[in-house]
Image (tube, rainbow over all chains, first blue to last red; front, top):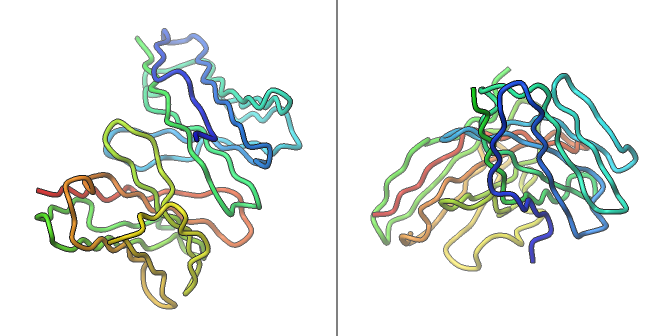
Length: 112
Length: 113
């Protein structure tokens, strides 16, 4: 039973354009959401997070949008750069960090 | 300001041997999480520990796997009698008390031959 879903295994985007990575969740108890980026042979790196009391959080080129009614969040990267090519994991938690559940990841390729 | 430290980075074990993976959390962090990533799969939660206490081990296989986070020293993930299916990347993450973000180490890659 996958509580956090990333239905696109891969995504290709042209450099300079917007990358939109999507994530859906099923557990209504989740109240905090995070995005991580992972390069091969390295650990995941924290990118940005959002609390369920907000619908948007922005940090530089990265913006996360949360639609609680749809149980959907998305990560926007603008403009996309070749160095953004990596696997992106969506994660959700509840009970203030008691449990972090990760999606299967989306591989982003930014083409020069 | 060192990050989460994991060692060894790479470990090769023969079937039936024991594997021990170590994790030192970031300074000031009292919570440790272990995740496993099998080839071509996502991150699967294994166990969540605080000092001297296992909080949630719902993701740990019932046999051969154990974890501890002693009062002094690193957290240890121990796999006894390893099998080929244990070959994976094992990631440790830590967080401070009362914070809702976890930070990962570089991972330990276990290969069972």
